[in-house]
Length: 225
Image (tube, rainbow, N blue to C red; front, top):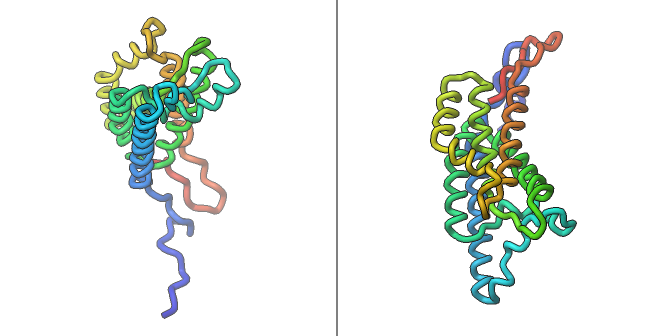
């Protein structure tokens, strides 16, 4: 049987319409990321039980102002001090990440990567000598501030409501987590992640502005979802 070589339905002007958001890939990405954190923490617990606390994987976190510590930027969100630390971050990632995933895979991956990198960089620059910074809370803060700021940028009722709800439940905790007066808390990582969330939300705002109609196309690209 010969296949029909003709393309699918076209938008006005003979071009393909914009694709909808990839919500399913976004959720798969989110679940895979959280699952990876759990696998690594389980491996760390086994390693500590077998060899001792001196062999914990947590030593591969961000070590500020150390050349070796730069590699910690890659590992920081994947390492956690204990199960309680992991559970707390996992809940924040799943709730906030699922909200962001409604807009598709691109914004979720972007805010994750930007918050990941900036959280590690700020921890490395400002973390203080002799400390090690671990945990995905920097990404959680990136998600928090992304959702809140994006709600104000888009000015859509749903986004504003979600932003206000997130701000109400997480706002005070987020502000507390940015305080340098808290002992044992990487406010530097939180700060970097928060900046990443704001920058990503602003970039998303710019991407959503309608593009000018190209000559002869007959189709102006609408906002990306």
